[in-house]
Image (cartoon, rainbow over all chains, first blue to last red; front, side, top):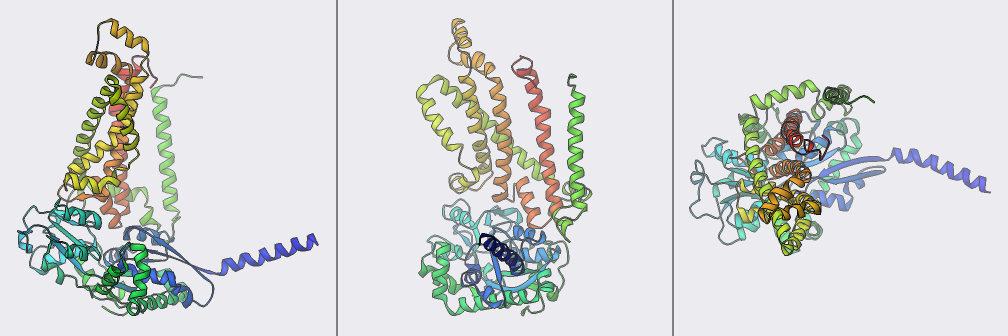
Length: 314
Length: 268
């Protein structure tokens, strides 16, 4: 009897091992904040797993920058990543081995000041007023450069005024008067707009409106070419998550507020101010601007070089 | 057993470095990390070219020299200030029991706090200027240095202290003529730890808090990472290693040789 049980156990193990190996596996890297709301929804609702015909294990990894995700994709340990459109274009131009498979969200950006004498770009260019933003070369830096360029200044006219600080540190520095200007995004921009004593430099709003792509999803070319069923499940799962966010703001807010520390009411408001869509907008213009103004060294090519063929937009 | 000669020591070190470099080159050439291995794990030749490029072209037209000089200036300011304060406070600990009690608590608590975690508070207090970085360097130097100094002062044999008193020394005289020379071995250990901690503290602070008007080496590394210029990033790490070696073998070791080794307190 014992022998029989042992034999059965071994047989069961032998069957289980190939079964485990056969199940598909996908590693998805994302970052912090409301701009990633559809990713949080897809993770919690299991949308990608549901869209896949078979066993699928999705491993979710939260990383703190697009550069980290780029390294992960290059080394083959990350299949899918969500990041700012800036690092994504940098990655594509550097031949990291991925392309954009979906747009995720667009968010409002704003340049806020605590100094009444600073109201236009003219008050900043040529002055020693410091501008805090999240990183030199970040999407916020590029948006500032685009704003300068759109208004007839050199795109790099404010490079020497920049101070790289994380969004919350920049908000604190602005509110305590440590520096006069902060360029930030959702949800910090909403909190700053509601704060007394702060006003907005209006010119920046037009440089990159919230309908434009801000966060995009990238997928390894290997995934797209060699595992088409899994790639399709990924796209379908994310599209469903984006539709879910647009159709169920309250349920989404209840979920994401647990991660962000905002109240559900604030979260509903902030979600309503974002734009969630699978269609890209403005990424070819962005790539061209980055190349023309030396934010990237290699020519990123045209729209078709940036995205997989199923992606709609410009 | 044959006596060790300095030449043999240098040969051993060079062989070790050659083995490490050869291992790096083999891994790089084997494309261990797949098709794009060359970008994440570049060959030595690529890193050497990037090393030159860092200084000749730099980032956005600004050579790595500029970043390096900015960092070294802040590092030096912070280290001098940190070491001076550590000497003053540790000296006071030897004079006053009450101060010693409070200061040892401050050292025990403050030494545990990572500098970058203090960044938001420091920015609120100091504003947005290079002073923030100097503060963080002081923070990384002063506590380990103080620990070593206090331990060193405490380990001075009672005999020396009594001999000093018999010679009529007190206060500052005791500190400079008895405590400092007798605790020299600990002071040098403190300097070594303090220097390494200051370097790391500076670079990590610069990586998350970068003032474009006074850019530092941490900001350069971050920039290279953001732009996926990994070879340039590794080349910058090589610069940091070279500076570390120069300080270790060009400054700290000679000081050690002319003091504690010469006095027979420690072997080199």
